[in-house]
Amino acid sequence: MPEDDPFRHHPGLRGKITPFRDSFFRDKTVDDIKALMTAKGIPILFPFHSDDTREGLRRAALKDHDGDLWVFAYGSLIWDPALDFAELRRARAPGHARRFILVDTYGGRGTEEAPGLMAALDEGAGCDGVAFRIEATKIETETRQLFQRELIGPGYLARFVDVEIGGDTARALTFLADHDDPLMRPDITRADQVRFAATGTGFLGSSLDYLENTVAHLAEFGIDDPDITALLSEVRAYMARTPEDHG
Image (cartoon, rainbow, N blue to C red; front, top):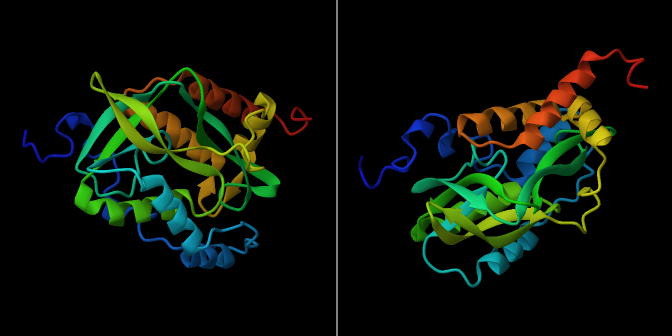
């Protein structure tokens, strides 16, 4: 297999990752998102970062980096990274966990009346995901795309963490849960996780779609996450109950 084939280490993943040119998230600006929200009748209440703020966060995160860049994906970035990558590898982030603790009330996948739920990388026993390698010459362009998506506003912290790739350890950029943000709920109850995942919806789609996609793609990639699989089972059981049963 050619050395310049991004899928050379995992040929079975070819066709399971959205090409960056086809991604909904490629080139989406704050103005684009606001226009989409307005078209769908969603109030613009989210505290969007200004372009200058986002660029400052990007430069601060990358200030000590040199050479090619690994980006660790644990949620929707796994199957739709919107990145022009040179290589992808299965990877594990020790000391972290994929947790559904980001409560969305701003219209992405939930509202104040029916909050949504999305994933964040938090402390834990280890998180399996995918690492994408960005060539040094493309880092400026690709990280601007990445930060425009992941740090369109508050919620995450752009940080480098140690990841295990093929028996070696590398430093990878990822997006950690920001516990100072009120939408990040590390103490969320299981009952609220289930309810929010079952009922939240917004301009990006439903929280249920997000959870189902996460479980399905993790399985496709050979990644086992029993807690997320169990959460989906509980959500489906919740939805099968009558409204009176929901209390």
